[in-house]
Length: 419
Figure 1 (tube, one colour):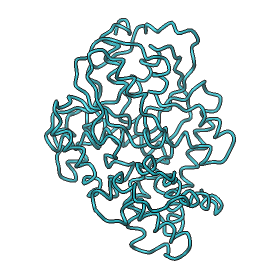
Figure 2 (tube, helix red, strand yellow; figure 1 turned 45 degrees about the vertical axis):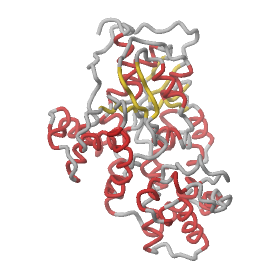
Figure 3 (tube, one colour; figure 1 turned 90 degrees about the horizontal axis):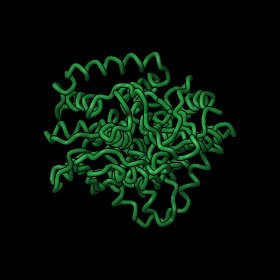
Figure 4 (cartoon, one colour; figure 1 turned 180 degrees about the vertical axis):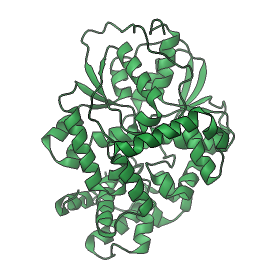
């Protein structure tokens, strides 16, 4: 999207909009503010005006309403005309970022994620804060308290797992190889999810490989309009992951959505080849069954990450993973198709609206009957946002990644030998 031709293609994705309004009830920010300019239909009008030069790049209202978009793409599945809202938004934000620059806070955050030597020490310090119990002790509803709650929500598994002496893999014939994409936030704060991913895949007949040279996926940069930053990171990942394995497995919905679009982002055959091998971990597990493990007598609500359901169109597979756990009573959380308000760095740039978007989800959980013991979702931002909200509201509900529950089921089922 860096070129004018690329931007034109992005804006053309908006051409089929007939302004019918079906998107309005699916838009979390419109539901929160009631402002037509905060709806997909209203934003498309603004983006069209930007494209035609009817509004300048520095128009305050234009920037306010486009910046307020979560980029969740919840409007796309309900659109009868097939409008490519996400492509249009990317084109508009890329143009605005090139003309006006990004806000200082966004520039600082994105610059940090460009360099591992900056983000890794930060996540090391945050893990210490979490493991010492300080993040949970400081968590609450204030701005700082909510941030501490987000860190507390990254805590490890229900049952600490050691390294398995052996994994009783299934005899499913061929053994596909899988390269685990480690990323930045997942590697820094959710290593227990990586470990659960490795174990559950190996238990279902995959060979999991470690691949050096990976960096941040670039999703945060792409969503903010920093095309150059996203492309630079993508090229490093393409180089690292080329010819690495039969599949590339992702356990972060936001990372997976962008990696699957690397071919579009870079416009290069090598990037398209890497993108074609990318799978969410639940896609790979569902393709092999997955095997049933030991019983978990739990009430669970599944909340679908926007970039898994709307961008990758993956919905049945996480439910198949949960269905493989005997004793687990799981159901879709009402409103699971709506964003939780995390949306990458959105919660940092738009904290008030981010919390307002989260409110409906928390109210649904508070009034659920029976109330779930665990909310399950497959994206780090969602885990942190929902987890912090639950702590702030005093709701004794945990948040977990789907593979964590399957991993615990396999532990109870004796799949891992001696631990």
